[in-house]
Image (cartoon, rainbow, N blue to C red; front, side, top):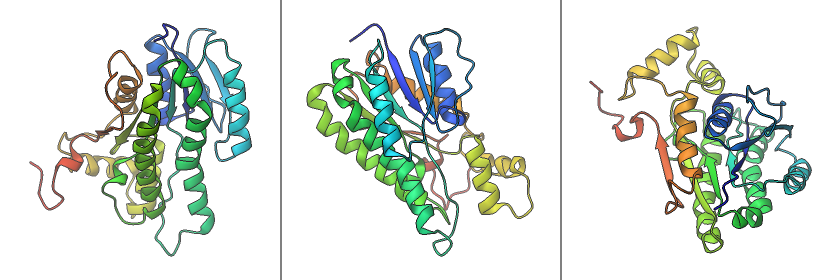
Length: 256
């Protein structure tokens, strides 16, 4: 295990991705922050890099892999947080909506894993895919998003089996309700009915056993744990749920 640990984090401009970049940097990792919008992170130190890459584009992903391959410190962890969410009914979900969700949420993770597997193997590295509780239980008007996150969980298991012999661990984190711009926008589109995102978040928190919405930092710490081979060296093919107990509670029960 190398003492110089480098994490490539997609979707790093905001939300869970930005919090993850901050968490890794705080733990002493070198961070390569990747996003369609150039990440503007408050990471101190010249060792960190921010790269503008649209992960919907396989050509840009290939170029990213080439750039990362030229880095003096090889990638130790690949963290796929980049995601898009479509909150539309089946009839309203267009072909383009479906393709966009699958390209960002699934294909990009596959292409990056394939392209970086040999490099990760040399570092006894890890891949952490950020899926969602929607992979296991979902709600109205989430067909494309739920399908993509379910596919990402299946991809995680398949990669874990295939890459274990070369020393690469692959796990997923499944966040529940996390206070991000994506969650707020999804709530307003799906259940808004004139209520503010703050009101919708408070109502959601009341239905969560821990009585709060998660923060991006809550998820970032789970990702860091699974990426760190000194703390999770015998964990692979696992899905770690970070949802405040939401999936543990029957939907027919009233939480107290």
